[in-house]
Image (tube, rainbow, N blue to C red; front, side, top):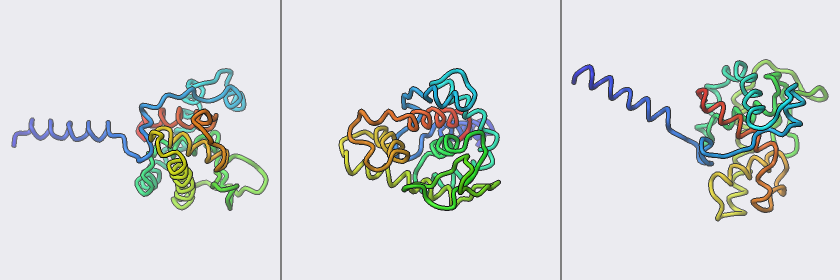
Length: 197
């Protein structure tokens, strides 16, 4: 085998890995989203909103989230969720990489937030905590799949994200799939996907 053939084979393999979209719940690269509401942007000091705001917030969080990237890959494989979606959720729930991890559940979800109250500061999010968060999200997505069997995988992902934050009864039709949490998380996830997640 010539060196040229070997190099071309490796490049083809790398290209197929780079372009692969894995995850059982939609392809985030093809999802359309309006991004963050103006309220989210303002809370973080931005005077703009939409995809631009979501991408800027993801960019701000990126250096901190990079340390969790291997764990997000592991958890993503375990639950068949794109690591970029996991990064998007963590970024949305932990502004500026300022992680405080709740010691229990908030409603039916694990919450990773910046808050004072009953939250315990931590400098590292464990695989177990990311797994709990992702498991809750996948349960919500599967609930949407059971309730709306004719929807697309993209709609299941949107529904799961909206019920993750809004509760199990939040989504009653496709009109409920445009919640701010979902729109912002998906825009951030698309940014993270383009940057190696």
